[in-house]
Structure formats: structure tokens, C-alpha cells
Image (cartoon, rainbow, N blue to C red; front, top):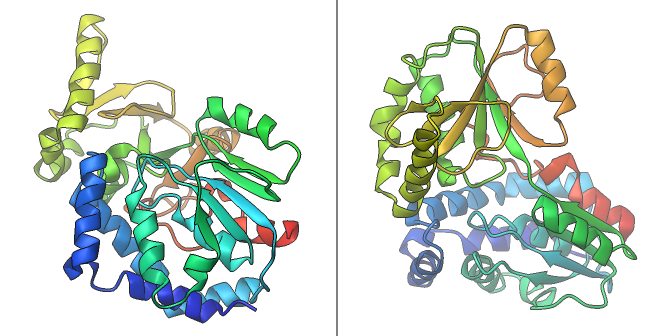
Length: 337
């Protein structure tokens, strides 16, 4: 029987005071040296999120939802994403806590952080070293969870066709504004857009705005806080590239000096850009969002009329039970097991 409180406490203890732990500090520096998107603020933000999510209150809720499964000999293969710090660790933890032996293939973009977290956690509960193996290839699996692009998703679905599998593909997040938001709410929206430089599926990449919306309400609020994005060389290179394309094509856009706002229907926007679209009817907008549910990860809005929305400023702070693609991964694994 797995001791859920002990396992979660080990994760929590592994992250305690990470800012002053020499081992963690060295790991964070190494992670940034290998992936320049992973600056120290982004890494610390992700570690803080996991420290909060691994509290004993959440551990108790986990046990209440799923019980304490027994150890299985079934092997769960994971191919982890690496676009954000520790973005794949949720699947690793879930697999172990559902009783599986986890074989995890880390992304080359995020190798150091998940391995350090489990190494530190194993000092408090050996389950994290005994039930997880970091591998380069996945073989002899009983189940698989894979994260990739829309293109690789089809390949993975074929490759793992003979075993139960979850294949995750690209999603985007959107925000809906009423035009009556306070400066504080607009600043919170900026975090949804720009945290992690817009690289995550929970990063808002498109705004739905009421007809006639004036960006003079929004951009002066964002500028003092988010103009520092122009100091990040990888981000600003993307910004300048897409700006140059728009200028060469004489394509209308709004240039904030650190982000380009472009009116278009697509949900996804490249790094350095933000799409927007005007709406006239909330009923029609809700229907549109419903039709795009398989492509949308989060809807950020403080408008009660918007169905399934999460409050502005919270998309980058998912709860422990906010599973990717809306599928309860733990329940799926327990059913498969």
C-alpha cells in the first residue's frame, strides 16, 4: 500500500527553502544554461507552484479522491514535454501514486529539474527513487502517456496502438474581456499572457474583446511591468522576426514595443505576438468557445457569462487536479490498472 501522505510530504520537503539550498541553486543555474527560456524567475515560479500543490491539505484531498493504491508491476511509459520548467512532473507523480512503475523519458529542454526534484524527494521517501526510472527509450510498457505536437501525436498514437495510452497535443488558451476590467484585473491578465514568455498551453495567446474595445485601456497598464520582455534575447528575437514579416507585408498590427497584437481568428500565436478578435454577442461567443473546446486549454475571464472560465491571472497557477486536456489522469490510470 502506498503511503500517500508520506509521498506527498517528501515532494513538499524537497522544495522547502529551495532558494537557499546550494544543490537546488546549482541545478537551477544548470537548467538555465541548457535552456535559456528557463530563467531563474520562471524556474522559481514553477517550484513555488509545486511547493504549494504538495501541501498536506492537497495530499489529504488526493487520498480522499483516489485512495491509497497498492504497488503494481505494470509499467507506465512517459514522454515528457519540456516547454516549461517541470511541466511533465505531474504525470510522473501521478503514475507513481497510482501504483505504477514509471519509465520516464525526459525532454532535452527540461532534464535537470525533474530529476533533482525526485532525487531530493527520495531522501524523505524512497518511493521516488524505487518506482521511477529515467530512460532514453520506452519498451515493454503496459500503458503510456505522451505529450507532443499535433504532428507527433499521430505518430505516437500509432506507435502505442496496442496498449492503453493518452496522447496530448497542442492546445492554446484565450481570454475574454468585457471592457470594464480594472487596472488590477488587466495586470493579472498580463501574467496569463506573458508568464513563461507565452510558451505554455495555459498561456493566453488570444483575446476576445467587445466591439469597439480601445487598447488605450490595456497597453498603458501592461507597459511598465512587461516591457522588460524586450530584454530577453530569445523572446525579443521572436518579436523582431514577426514584426519584420508584418512590416514587409504591410499587414496591419499594433506594436507595443515588446509584443505585437494582431487581429485574426487563430487561437495560437507565436512567441512575441498576441491575437485578438472582436465579439458582439456573448451567446455566440460561448458557442464558438464550445466548438473549440478540443483546442482550448483555459479560458481566462472575470465575466460570469463566460462558461468554464478561470479568473484573470490564474491560468499559470493550475491546481493539483487541473489535468491536461480535461482528462483525470489519475482516474484513467486506476481504471487501466
